[in-house]
Image 1 (spheres, rainbow, N blue to C red):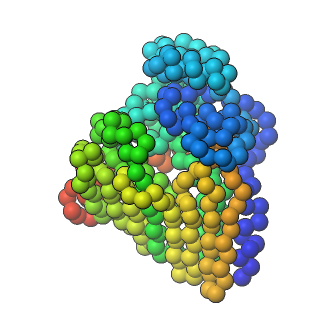
Image 2 (image 1 turned 90 degrees about the vertical axis):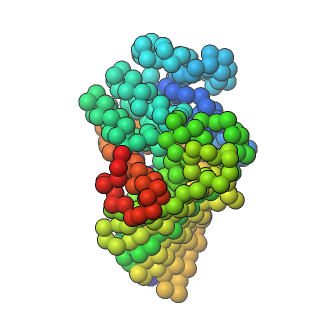
Length: 372
C-alpha cells in the first residue's frame, strides 16, 4: 500500500466551492480568546499568546462591529484593529448598529450563549457560537430552534474540524485504510490556573456548566464523533476535584464512550496536569495518531501505520481560527449547511450529560436516557 498517496493535497480546502464574497462579522464578547486569537487571525497578525506562526488574513470575513460590556476595552480594541462600530450588550439587544454586520461570533461564558444567539437570530443575523454550545442539551436545542425559526445559519466553533490534519485523518478512516475502527484514545490537559487564576468564569459552575469536561473534554468527544461520523450510545465516567480552587466543577474527568458499531473511545481531560493533547485511533488493519490534536498554534504531526509501513507527516501551518471563520462565511455565501451545526452540538451536550450522570451515579448511562 502506498501510504504517501494519502497525504497528497494535504492542506487543500476540500470544502471550498466559491472564491468571492464577504461576510461582515460582529464579535460578541471581547475576552482573552477573542482578543488574543480571533482578532489577530482575522486581521492577519501573529496571535497574541506568543506564537510566531504566520497568519494569513481570512478570505471571506471582515470584523465590522464589537460588542462588549466595557466601553473602554471596546474602543481600545476597535482602534487597534480599525473596527468601525462598538456596541454595549444593551445596544446589541436593542438592534442598534444592525446594518453594520451580517453575522455574529458569540464568545464569553457558556451560560450566556443562548441569549446572545437568540438576539442575533431575532435580528436576522447568522451565528458562529463558541464551543460548547451552551450549558445543557435543552438550552442547545433552544438555540437551534431560534436559529431555524429565523432562517439563519448556526455553526459551533470546533476549530479542529477545519484543521487539514484532522480532515485527512477522517479520510483515512472513511477510506478503510485502518480497517474497522476499534478503539480511540484522546486527551486534552493543561494548567488553567496558570492563565487567569481562580477568579474566572470557567470555574463558576453557573456560568460554565461544568469544568474540564465542558471546556477541554468536549474536544476529544467531538473529534471522535467527527472522525466516526457517528454518535455514542453509552458512557461511563469518573470525575474528581481534589483541589479547593475547583470546588463546584470537575478538575479531572475520564470517560469511555460506546459507539453503535462496537468502537470505543477512552478520553481524559484535566484542568491541572501537564499540557498535552493527542488522538490515537486503532483499527483492525492499522493505526493513526495526531499530535497535537487540538492546539491551534502548533503544526500537528499525523502518523499512520499499516502493517510494516509507517508514515509521519507534518503539513503546513494553518491558522485554525481564520480557517474556521472562512468556513463559516463560505457556508453563508453558498447557502451550505455547516458541519458542525447546532444539531451536531446538541449531540455533544447529550453525551456530556450522560458522562456527568455516570460520574455521579457510578453506572453506565445510555445516551439520551440521561436525567436532565
